[in-house]
Amino acid sequence: MNQTKYIFSAVTAYFIWGFFSFGLKPIAHYPSLDILFYRLFISVFFLLIINIVFRRNKIVSDWNLFKSLAKKEQKKLLSLIVGGSIILMANWLVFIIVMNHVSVQAASLSYLVCPIITTVLAFFILKDKLTKVKWFAVGISILACGILSIGHFTDLMYSLFVAIAFACYILIQRSLNRFDSFNLLMIQLSVVAVLMLPMVFLYASPIPTETIFYQCIMAVVILFTIIPMFLNNFALKGINSSTVGILIYLNPIMNFVLAIVYYKEKVTTLQISGYALILIAILVFNSQIIFKNRSIKKSEG
Image (tube, rainbow, N blue to C red; front, side, top):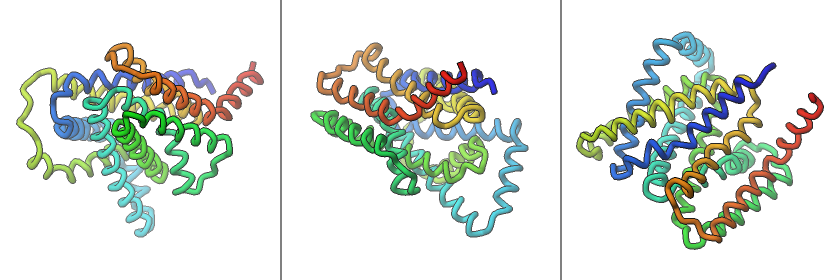
């Protein structure tokens, strides 16, 4: 099977996500909770329109699948959907705070360590196997985090919260993978929108009047949420998760480059050492996949 179009879709998705800061930084002076409210409710609106108009057969298929399950299984799935919704919102909110009020470096660090944290959590929660090589990579990551915490402990805690929240969300999604992922996103966001509606009346600021706010929110919703989600879901149909696991690093690496080159964020020698160790940990962590892919290419050539 020709995987070019699937790999291109994955690369495009993570390339787009690498510029997420362009949608958030211009409205950093707005409360993070307000940005979250608008992102959430506008995303729900578009997802409902897209799914109802263009993907009704997927909705019907998932609904029939859900109805075919035993009551106990249905209750378990509902609890996972609600739990995943709340965790995703926590991830979204803290990511906005980190990107706008901590640093773009801290935001990029979150998704650099996220795949490693996901695997470790899967080991403890789902009893997945973890090789000695991957445990070695985890040890390097812990050392790197210790170095990065020197003088920036709060920044590191924010980064780890974002990473752990998203890792937990991924694990929950794995338990729900029998359903269409885009339908799941629509349902989860709809659920959390209902749960958060009272907070809008209690904590929302006056309606923004600046055009830039709505331009950035629409960019966040359409360009940085819906489009890359479509591309990512399409990519997963044609390439394995291991390949996606390698390509996903394109996003945080681009964020880190933007932090230094575009946003002129300062980075100390100690931080460079920490980030270098993180990159080494990533290479070690994915070494078996990298060498396997290389051997496959050689055999095909």
